[in-house]
Length: 163
Image (cartoon, rainbow, N blue to C red; front, side):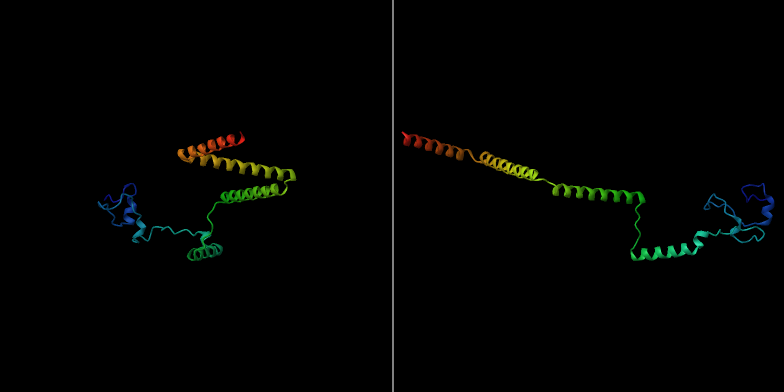
């Protein structure tokens, strides 16, 4: 008895089917099935199972349509349903906030309008004062001294005229 099979428990199978398989250094360790060589007609060969989904007409039509759309560049959106819902909610919140702002602008009373005008005027005056102060801070010292001398000269001239 030759030891071609890994398990010598089934020596009767060796007589039925002698594929001539031997493990050479280049072969894999996994045992290859005997029915691939076609020497044995007595063994039952496995058949490929039929997938009922792939054989259905609806599946074939859908698959054909997807392939055509992919070739055209019309791939379907691959966003999950949760992401779509969250984006929709976010859009609705933004629209709602914009509507509320518009309604708030429309519903202002006369008193609020007057107060807003006064507030704007005060802000403009404050900005002008800040600009003047910045200009004074940025001017060189000799210009400041010159303006001080002019003021003192004008004050002394004014005192002389009054006396």
